[in-house]
Image (cartoon, rainbow, N blue to C red; front, top):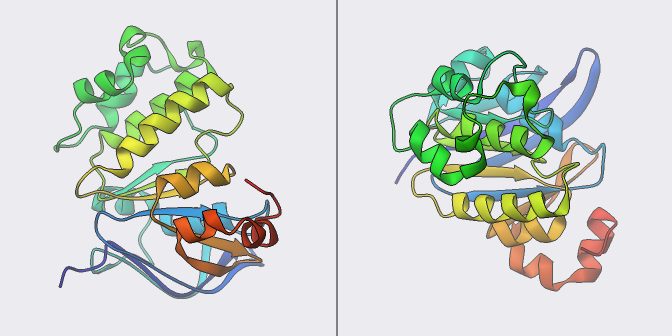
Amino acid sequence: MAEPALILAGVTAGYGETVVLEALDLALRQGESLGILGRNGVGKTTLIDTIMGHTRLRAGTLRLAGQDIARWPPWRRARAGLGYVPQEREIFRSLSVHEHLQIAARPGPWTIERAFTTFPSLAERRRHQGDALSGGEQQMLAIARALVGNPTVLLMDEPTEGLAPIIVEQLETTIKQLGREEGMALVLVEQHADLALDFAPRCVVMDRGRIVYDGKSAALAQDRELLQSLIGVAG
């Protein structure tokens, strides 16, 4: 039986003296897509930050493809196969689009040219610096940069936040295509419940640093009353 792509067992973590996640358990199979839902402030971003090594881990274990990464720094986790699309995008103002991708690129199916094919607007602006891009283009670049690193697990933290509806539609199409990518597990934190539920066959809902629902997305999508009670919105 294949080793799970990612395992969190009994994870308690937070920032400084503040505990956000409490005794959290989560496992992700190789190639699996997972949506993460929840109200604001319940620990969704902290979960992603903890997987990447940006929080203080107080208890528990983290394993990536069988390797114990709990004490590894973020750069080592990235080299081991974690890809990360941060909520803040973290685009370098003085680097061109092509330079962003060159720095991040590692051998694998996702090449720079494939990224440009996936995001044609980036190809058109490959010589533009990061501060010359629109918000939507910066988000596309953040995703493309993570992809050319050829991760085994890709973490995306609210990639559609604050974008114009037409850009959100474009990104939704791309994200759904990524969900069908063989060999890469994906974790999507998303405020748009319908996008997350449509993206992944499985979803989890968080509340107060814990997982309160872990099951089939289709079942939750059909039970709007339960969805309302868990995340406070109807869709």
